[in-house]
Amino acid sequence: MVIKPRVRGFICTTAHPLGCEKNVYAEAEYAKEKLAGKNGPKRVLVVGSSAGYGLTSRITAAVGYNAATVGVFFERPPSGGKTGSAGWYNNLAFEKLASENGLSYKSINADAFSNEAKDQAVQAIKEIMGQVDLVVYSLGAPRRKDPETGEVYHSVIKPIGSDFTGKTVDFHTGNVFEMSVSAASEEEVAGSVKVMGGEDWKLWIEKLSKEGVLADNAVTVAYSYVGPQLTHDIYKSGSIGKAKEDLEEKCAEISKFLQAKGGKAFVSVNKSLVTQSSAAIPVLPLYISIIFKVMKENGTHEECMHQIVRLYRDMLYANGMPESWDNVPVDEAGRIRIDELEMNPEAQKRVDELWDKATTENIWEISDLKGYNDNFYSLFGFGVDGVDYDADVEI
Image (cartoon, rainbow, N blue to C red; front, side):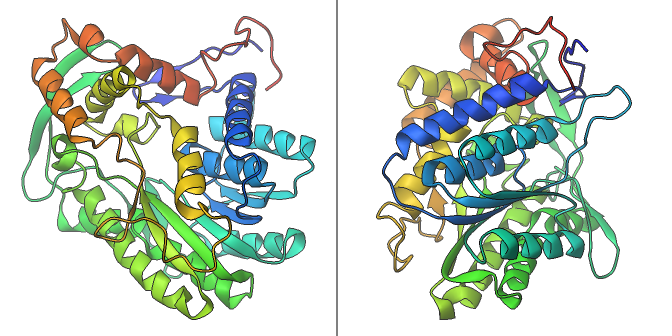
């Protein structure tokens, strides 16, 4: 069938298999070039491996370090003439890539919050690599079912304490407008922490350790975001921010748990990118389109692949496989910061200036809204160079 993008708000309901494959292979080429001759992890589990930072983490470990990988994700296969999700096709492309490079892998399409997914991952680890020395936790989800109680929790993107009103942009049309978001209730905050906090990350590590598949000196990293003051009311100081605080608290607990065998846990604060999640957060589309403009002008702009290569090459494995994780560079809160180029004071000062000027009339000139849109469609395999979007393709 001929596949065209069908967009509803911040969601595209179709995905292009060949475009997704091109994206995966482009990331692999970059990782292979930048990590040639470097030493790093050889046995890797990625929880949340089908898109964004999680997918890139798996690609980078596999082709950059020739690592065996297990990936866990929850994606929709094609059915009844409808395309599969972008994540579904991303994973197929990864498996093709891994096979061509003679790499060991197992992919698990299951709810990562469930006990069943954890059991499947343990079995896969035992089958293909025995133990893991790196666990990447990169889940972003709107809901979570507690595996013990069966209760379902939902995450929300809301301020805490008072309603929020701020400027944003419809990234499809360029319409700049003010929008309001009501304050989260205590129940909504608690639900957001349950879904997006660190509880499930800790359960994964405890499960892997109990089953004997977590290697001595293993490291685990979860991804987070802080962002500038402009976004704090809706993000860092809001319901998601509370979840990220819990993620950092659980990071400390996991580190203490791993300490006896030389392991450690880190939270990596990454830069803002166009993702399905960020497209849904008020304010962020406007902020991201402006920071893209500023960073591209400064020559400091990075996409997902650049961030993860730096995380591996310059932070976690700067000296190959370390005997101790004490030399990993962290901030005063113990977090790895690969968002430092975004958070550069001069760059943020320029963002503030452009933010104040942004209107519907000038948004395409003072920001990189086109780049934002290109990235959004690329998430689903559209607008990718070298793909004939008028041709029939097998879904």
